[in-house]
Length: 105
Ligand SMILES: [Zn+2]
Image (tube, rainbow, N blue to C red; front, side):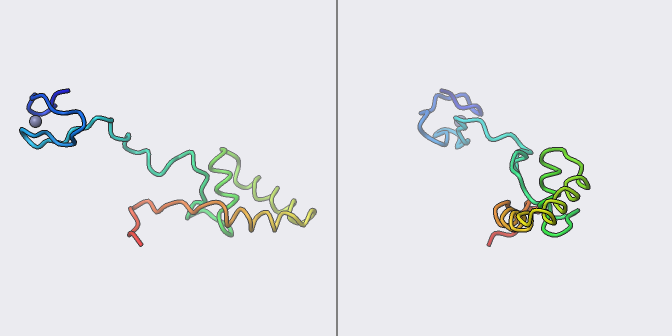
């Protein structure tokens, strides 16, 4: 393969061009805007009622958030399993990352 910057042949296993020092990108970089993963079910940090579980499901699946909350409340009231399920989902579903890069812990 050849350096994309100076055109000199470079070893594909090396990460930098020996002639000009440019970074050799064998694999294309991940597309921008792909983080956070939109397919990941998360609990949004805003628009949440308790822990954002209902809002997370509504956003993820395109459901009506009020409908999700009503159904959740009814299930919790009449089956007794809803509250437990909510707590479990609260623990399982990760919180959505902040819009700005959060400081590394
Ligand atoms: Zn080069």
